Every structure is written in structure tokens, then in C-alpha cells.
Length: 217
Image (cartoon, rainbow, N blue to C red; front, side, top):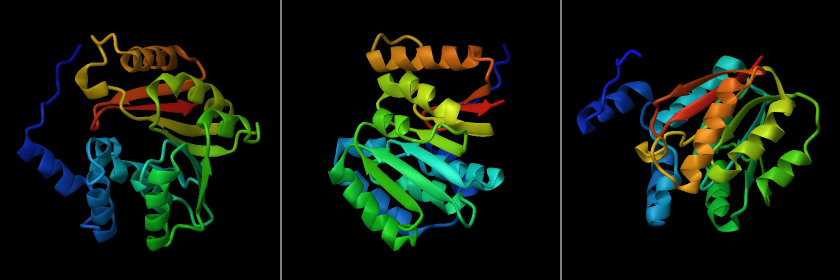
């Protein structure tokens, strides 16, 4: 074990954000403010550095087909869609008409409405209805944690070789190791399963609340 890690202070975190994300984006700032006004549930929005990371991943992969499981108010979808290739498309899966109505407004304002398709309903059903062919380049999963295993089952066969699945909240607020909470238990089970899966290469990163990346071999 190599204990080479750093606990971020607020000042250090602000430094990271200032140097690890695109310049100020008024639209995303407005979306963040509107989401925060929803109350405690607003914490489900991804962190700004996660958004920048997703955009960079999509661009590095020249991704054309992307899937998002758990869209909320649309911040992460904007970040992914902005990184897609010119003919790229993003399929978003969510169950909330209320929250995704906010997302739709901001997608239109961002000029991305024609690149993002939203399907409302249980995400596992939406994924099972997709073609079985391996054509997905990039998937981002940020939904109910106890469903992560099912989402993995449905996404991996549909991922093209060298395609990537990104799972959010894999550190569960720092309690993933010692919590008996069902979500923490499910996240541990997924991490163990992905790490042992010979079909993928995996890395768990301490970005925001933890991102698990699984690359299909």
C-alpha cells in the first residue's frame, strides 16, 4: 500500500476546480443555482470537476454513442453531450418528469436538445430494450445505488471494445467501507465484482464522491 493521498481543504478544492474545469459557464452556473434551490435533493448534482472530467473522457474517446443512467436536472448530460463527436447522441434514462423538465430547458438553451434523447421509466427496462449489439462508447451511471449491478449487466454487453462505463458515488460520502446501509453494501459488491471481472480493466478514482471506471477489453 502506498499512502500517497491528500485530504483536500476548501482552499485546495477551490484551487482544483479553478484549474481543472473549463472557464466560467453562465448556463451551468444557472443550472447549479436552480438545482440547489430544490433543497437537500440538489446534492445529487455532480461536482463541477466531474463534469469537466466527463467532457474530457467523451472527447478523448471520440464518443458517438453515449448513455446516461440517472439524469436529474441535466448537468452531467450537458457535460457529456458537449464532449461527443459531431454526430454523437446521448440517451438519458430517468424516472422523474419533474427533475428532467428542468434538464430539457437547459439542454435547449445549450443548443443540445437535438443530441440528447430522454426516456422516462425504469432504466433497466430502457437498457434491456436497446439493441444487443456492442455499439455504446461511453456510459455514465449515477442513479439508485442498489441498481448498479443490474445496470452493469445490461450495459457491458452493449459496450464496444475499449468502451467505458463510469459509476458515480462509489465512496458513498466516505462511508462505503464500514456502512451497513444497503446502498453502501451494493457499491462494495459492485466494486468487488468489477475488479474481478476478466472482461474489463477497472480503476477507482477519488474524484468528488468516487468514480469507478470500467473499460471493456
